[in-house]
Amino acid sequence: MLKKSFLTQNLNPLDIKVIADAMYKKSYNRGDTIIKYGDMGSEYYILSSGFVEVYVYQPGTKADDPNINENVMLTKHLGPGTGFGEIALLYNDKRTATIKASEDNIQVWVLEGRVFKNIIIKQSISRRNIELGFLEKVPLLQNLEKYDKMKLIDGLEVKYYAKGQPIVVEGEEGNYFYIIEDVRSIIE
Image 1 (cartoon, rainbow, N blue to C red):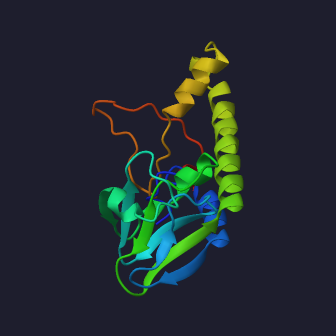
Image 2 (image 1 turned 135 degrees about the vertical axis):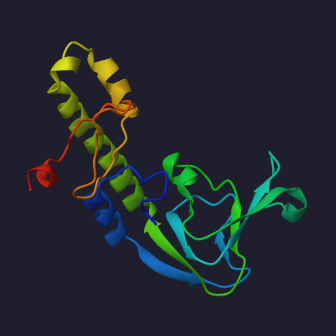
């Protein structure tokens, strides 16, 4: 599931393991509130099984409004594999929606907010520094300014190939520029 989340999909397997080890499983039943609009964010969730309903309110709606349900602007359902709760954590802000369990015994994986921030931000900075180190060693790119190299890093995407799977095929049109990060599988 972590490989599907936009926040973690480009992390390497070791980084994903660190996050997975820090998560714990929690269950909710139909109607249980997982996230409440207006609360400060303290956890990030990934839905493991079941469905949740998201309630988005009209701009300016007060969290303590006794008629808050009359201000629902949009509702939508999220299914397994979906992550939620990251906005309040990333921006250190209040929850922008209410999320409730749509059925009994839904399962979510939970990551505490401080751990989320530590791991995601730390891993992101670490990853960018590693990638910059790779680019610094590429003769073709040595004359680029650091700013340009950082912009190039923003476009990098990690791809994994199984042993024996071709990366480049002679005669085919080249659509990608490859930088080999880990050569263990090439050497073996």
